[in-house]
Image 1 (cartoon, helix red, strand yellow):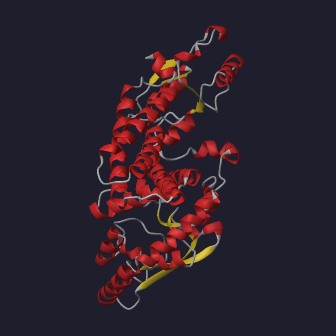
Image 2: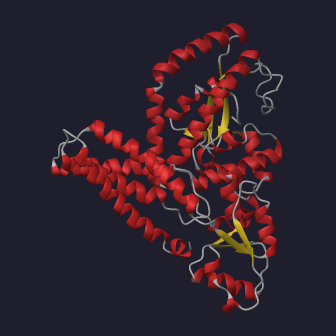
Length: 413
């Protein structure tokens, strides 16, 4: 077991090559297909998927199955490129079948390998280990409490990770230990990094002290792709959203009076104000005096409750997305007065404006509607986590979770 643990990546590499050769050879059993083309498809897909998806990232936690989506794209792109360059015959049906087969296979292979691997051991001082054990009931790892006496007697092969508390004033011996662990190739994490991955939100107290050192540099390519996808989404949904909007407008006019669209200035990208549009769901003469109090707000009409529950009241915000005020996914835009209030009371609240606000977001699918300083403090922790980790993968996760919540009625949105 120690041998397997020590040479884990190397073993997986040779396993990958072996499986790639084996399944490429099996193509000979497929009749009426070009052997060279099918072998190339099997090789590229199997080699990339099996090697990348089954190996554990250099983190304590496995980040779901996001590698599958990314690697499927690159493997198929590589295959298509080779077919184009060498002008090989190809079969889309077989390519699709092979891709589906390997996606299922490598997912099962990864599951089996992760079950075989020994539990990762996390080491630290007594206080930090006790705090870590209580962080999350789902967090099941082996823990080792270190009592430093002589650094020369420590066997670093006995543990996989080291955790520390950045707020704690460690003595010289502990500081030397952290340096030795780093030099020995043992990953050293702060407890806040672990809590962030577990809970999906950052520690604002930690950010308050060293947020400049954190990575808040947004990927321009990702932002451009996201903007393009926002526009595409708005355009392709128009055949559905335009007739649906006409029906909703008629229902509002009949049941709630003349005004159909509700607009309000919100704080958007870079702190700039913009006018957001929604279908009206509240009693007209009262709806802009204070922020919404939640689902039980007496100002919300019966039709308004239905529109809010199904998120149909948000359809006019597709116009905000088209003109660039908003994105489909991002931190929710706050009312001007609310944003001003919480910017004064909550540290780093203005960081929410680094991205275009969204119709739905990471905080919404985890927390839902919030009021007060405490609720907005928690929302900020989710929002900053999203800003730090924003990607197409996490956007898809938010989108699918939003759809699930809207359809089933179970969840935070």
